[in-house]
Length: 247
Image 1: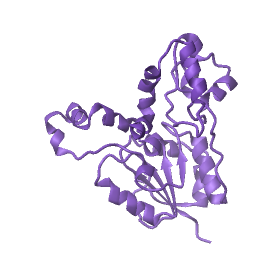
Image 2: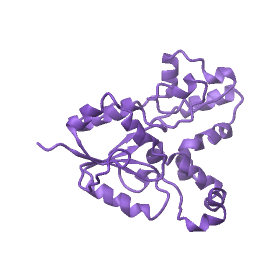
Image 3: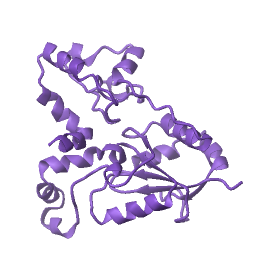
């Protein structure tokens, strides 16, 4: 029986999530025994457009990228959004708020007109994806869980509870008790609370849980004397696409 053929594709991103795949050093040989990787610019020179499973990193930020993405969707039996940029548009969506023309001038100066750009959006705003691996960057454990699940024909076990759960498991002092604020109360867990555990705030790089307790979140803000705008400024860092949709 032929092994599934796998391709990795990238759009607007830092490609850090693909590097995380290569960081699966102890497990990579097992993966290669189960699949044939036929397209992966970060790792191999060969390139094939005949594949069964496509992993896509990056947001769509140019209209000219849409036909390429649509072609990948047509070729792939299974399409997976890989990382925050592909899942929610990631940091790229910030330019939608700051103004696309202003953002281009800030980055490229007088050469801004040389480059094509459009409003940033996640993969599923253009084509249907079959699964998501969240995070910035993705956790290697979650990538491996998804690969095993796809090969076994079962639904991957992706966390759908807030980061606060993982903070409590790690016995972290809640950042709200330190006079700070974070998105952990509504953010999707699965990162093992990386940022709060090492002195940072949770910016919800893994997106939101499917049923966030907005009432509890607002009560915490009120209790700590914070406003929705305080959190919205943080929320837009990785999840601005949701706010754009509401507007």
